[in-house]
Amino acid sequence: QQQVKQSPQSLIVQKGGISIINCAYENTAFDYFPWYQQFPGKGPALLIAIRPDVSEKKEGRFTISFNKSAKQFSLHIMDSQPGDSATYFCAASGSNYQLIWGAGTKLIIKP
Amino acid sequence: EAGVAQSPRYKIIEKRQSVAFWCNPISGHATLYWYQQILGQGPKLLIQFQNNGVVDDSQLPKDRFSAERLKGVDSTLKIQPAKLEDSAVYLCASSLSRSSGANVLTFGAGSRLTVL
Image (cartoon, rainbow over all chains, first blue to last red):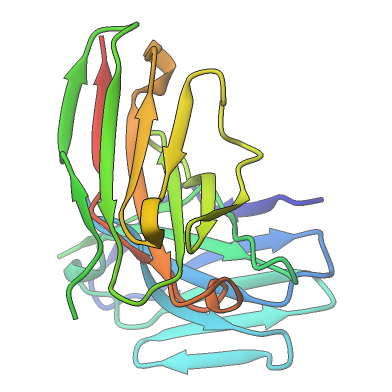
């Protein structure tokens, strides 16, 4: 019940296309859902986060869509660029603030 | 603002040897985390400190791993003796406080350990 399941494991998208990464959780007590971006040789960095009181949050080309009833949330990257090529992790936490991480999605944007 | 500093960046040792990693968090960050990231997997929390006290070390293999955060600032993570399966990147992260830990974790670049 503590797991966060992330898919796909890897994703190849053409430059200018939309990248979509999905995550599902089971613990309804989770109340914070961040996405982290990790480039090779670097630590993860917070990209965008959402709380379950909203269904969508947008920051530039990055959007989180949140479906509370389905216990799913997704990251959409609009107009994907080669610089977006990285590994993306979803995560979730509840009242103990302990982040539960997805397994990651390796995104490659083809020029 | 300076980031989270970690050293060494790379370390190669033979099994049964020992290794130590050092982390200097962002100034003023009370909460410090050590994560293990095996290639192709998400980070796994090893230990979490609030100031110099341990908040959670439930996933730390205590028979071989130890960590300390003296004076609530720098931290060291030690592995002794190392096993082949310890080959991973060891990430240090910090946040303002435990309650803000759910908001933003700032990670260092990591220390890559290879055990031969």
